[in-house]
Image (cartoon, rainbow, N blue to C red):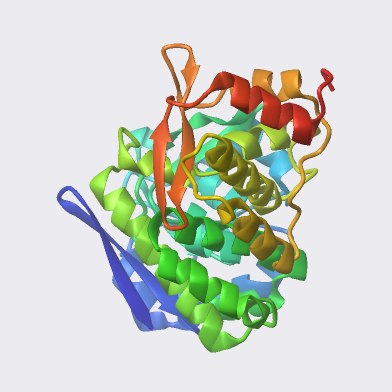
Length: 362
């Protein structure tokens, strides 16, 4: 088992990574305490991994809330189902919510935990690569709105993130590839050598080589934890974690939540961010092509849907990084270094979107 400690102020959230962790009675007993438990999962993950979690909890009683699977269900209505389950189980403020699933389950369960009785404890038990390297870490919780992704939510740190890498064995190939987009993003914002390592080993990751996956997960988690520790509530450096996401969220909302996986939209967003960085002179020539090539080798999409330039700009205008009416974007200074800035040419952004997403209104 590998451990990374995410220290935020006076609090610490351990990130534990390794095989067999869901079944570890000693580990789960250390972090779950003795009060009431609610396990939130979905109909896809629960049949596969809830029995293992039940063993890890030493058959201790717990309530359950099973939600529909998919990004399209990441709504206030789904969050209300979790609240209803907590009320029905008569949970008190000393209870804990356990999020067993991917990013959607983690976001919904964490947001419900943040709201119930003004905040109760929760634990992340991520079962997808994307959740293990990104969404389960850092305390961002929330749900989508028809007007935009993740517009409703709260910062609420888990007591622990327990990433059982055995769960990746049942992960569909498409979901694994989507998670690789967030691994590549971590390298792009924080570690050029890691990016080069990924270029050398992307086929091993696709083949699910255990050692290669373990290193990639650990390094991606280290990069994210290091950034979050400096800026829990995204007032500064944490915005770097949104590389490609202004484009990605616009794509997801424009197509309808759930049409593309989040990591697929992020992959396209990474390419667009790299191309804009190169067009505006921040990134050396050839850098955007390296980003695009690696994502192609990871079997991820690299071209946006033809939503149209004006529609993309409209959707990006709802991004949480808009300040003073100006959209700040995360742009690359190098493969391994990024900046969140409004210092770019709007004409260059419009031209890029016209070239890539279509000049019409969509």
